[in-house]
Image 1 (tube, rainbow, N blue to C red):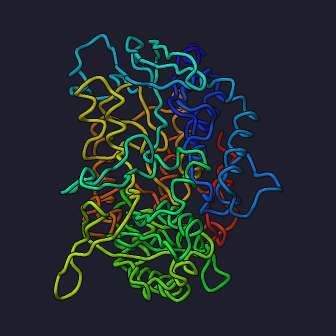
Image 2 (image 1 turned 45 degrees about the vertical axis):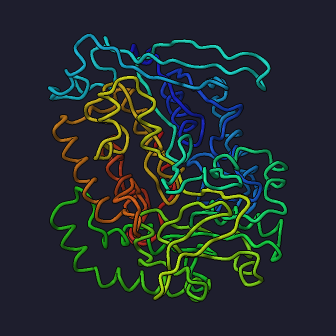
Length: 532
């Protein structure tokens, strides 16, 4: 078909970019994938030496590509990179990737004025993926030399459709604003992104024999603290400075035998959640089932509190377990982490805020006297996350597009903006298992480009975005002081999200055989393997 000759660009060759390219290839397109790094794998190519999957390999996989039998139950980062590279080879994705190619600017050039999108009734003017065929995306791409031995060059390319697969956990670090700031500190301050980008030997040398303070309470903060404790022991303990502790899982099942997937990742579990756009009956049913939802959350939380001494060390979360599922804030600490806490090689410090002084960090007061505390340090590592919204904004040349693409509402189907033509994003929304959620979005975008379905009117799309925005505001906040009001997390409604994508694509949403299996067995990527 004529539209398959259209030029399609994919930015990023991580988990979402590989899936987007694979499914475009399956439908006859020949996309070009721009990847800033030297290999496929995205963030998995830039991690700490100890980084492992938090999900079992059986769950963290593409629907039609199993792990090799030699993979660990919770694969290390090298095994994840090998798995992604094998996926790229198997489906010919690697032949489409241009490595060491950074997209530094994206600009939409259309026949009409830029504000014409404000008057659309249908997306791109006619509801089609490629609009009327007159608009193009102009990408400015910087090609880097191998190993820095040759100078970089800049090229300009034009495409009929742009797919951003740049994620939210890289690129622009979130640096807290403090007063005094890092300039007052005589030691070294770096973001976890910088540490992860170092060679393993260089990162180990940086931590060895140093007083290290890690700011943050997410997965990366725990991994850094574990590596520091292994390098220095109790003689030079690593201090973790935390504002809002998050829930920790030492294993993905409770009471020794029940996977939490049976509690939170099946249709029955989603009956207890007021799903966006599901109607009055769904909200009423969720209200009636609220006591059961509370009981499951309380029981699950009680199990992990007993198994992991969070309360004993002042790291008990201030919100229920269900909240961490709906906001995708769950971490699995490195093996034996709390043994290192008990031996004194890791020390926790709770603080609402911090600032720098010459010898380390100044924390706010705790207790009745409200006395400030000083954490001595030679190195401060900020494991404080990323500015995914800013990274997305930075892609665009147009101030108008900058303002609307990272605005107050999520994207339609977490993929397209109702007022930005010929562009999609895959992998921007989080999930408890990111391959599971991003692969379905990649299938949806590929079918959209292939003309398998049309988008609804712009007003209906914006109403849907508003519904999802209200859901995120209610359910997907960080659960703590100073955290974002909401985050695009599909954790508690991933199955409902997939149902919407299936209905759009004309596929059967219910993928299991039998009533019991359909309502009570967990859903995963393999259930959607038949959708290509």
